[in-house]
Length: 313
Ligand SMILES: O=CC(=O)O
Image 1 (cartoon, helix red, strand yellow):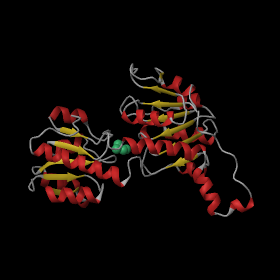
Image 2: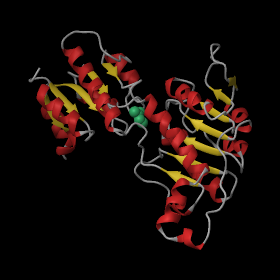
Image 3: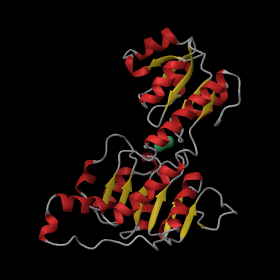
Image 4: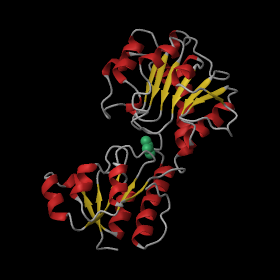
């Protein structure tokens, strides 16, 4: 397999790079500033592309690589990959589901607790010596709050299970009702937002879910409601979110993702009712290693003519 060209779109994890290097002829895209020339020179040797949450195979890249057979993504979300183009051209697509579910769900609960109990501000309070002048102000209880989840897939379900342990009533929105679910279903997001304290975005980013959190949803959530986004930045109309927080129309937000990462609207930095994370939902050594092994396993399976581990297309 050493002669098979694999294009790695962006640095993802040293372990993954080392293992790809051992098995394939690895091209690191970021090492070639003349992208168009690089693609022309290597169009006939690249048979696989590896990307992640920030970089995927878009239509132009797919068109530039006539020998492309598989796109193996180091992420569960595949919104950066032109899936229709891949289908059209018979290019296989894989992602890394399941192994990251626990981490993302754990972090969601962490974000909720950090936001409601103001854990980051409390930590700062102790470090800055302010505790010596008096106790920290009272915060907000999590247990028993109503949690609304957008997207009751693997991650949404894992969040629901965890929130249940905090005695939270759970409700959800998804395209279709899940008859097997015991949670309350709302057929639209505004209704869900009107009926929960904490609204969690945990669905894939698609044309339909782009800006699923808009002004109407935010207003329905209201000044006592909080938004948690562990999906994609583009699920949220970010300027609208910022103005709702500045105007007090929304109670708070816990965000792991942003519309234009790594750029975060600076107006958020001054607010004490937000917790901001640098897209780290799956970012543990254990999970990222498992994700890398799935990427490698899918590529090996493909080139050995075996069934893919996690086929999407
Ligand atoms: O955002 C993380 C992922 O899609 O894996």
